[in-house]
Figure 1: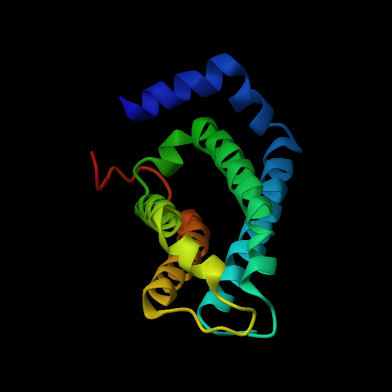
Figure 2: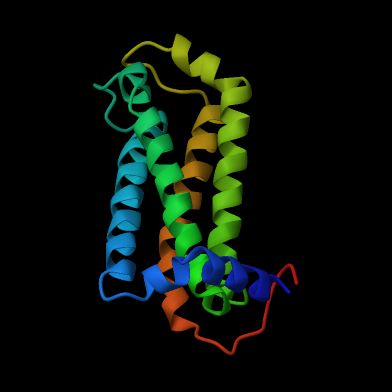
Length: 169
């Protein structure tokens, strides 16, 4: 049911036709990788600073780059949706894709936790300060989650249809 619905969306919107042109898939994949590099360049560097690396850079200064990471995340969600609706049978039942989505959900829940209260503690820290363990744990989970997104995203191509194995199906 899921695959058929996604296929219908791809067919009726023209996404499938666009993605199967000579330049459609490569162009969107390039945008996806640029978005991922931007996301990890901003959020990853911020997480590393929270973990205690590069103490000469203030956390507040790095935090100003987070909106670029958010924009990159939105761009990646849009480009990822194009991949999904243009070849749903390659993604929906793919265990690597399922693990990638799980890592993204963990990362997004982690962001919600961080911005619920610990961000205030982080903003109060000085430029050379060391973050408390609770914030370091959040940063480590974030970094591990985004690394999981990269690894499982690369592994997706190792699994090709007809795999009908699904965590949530």
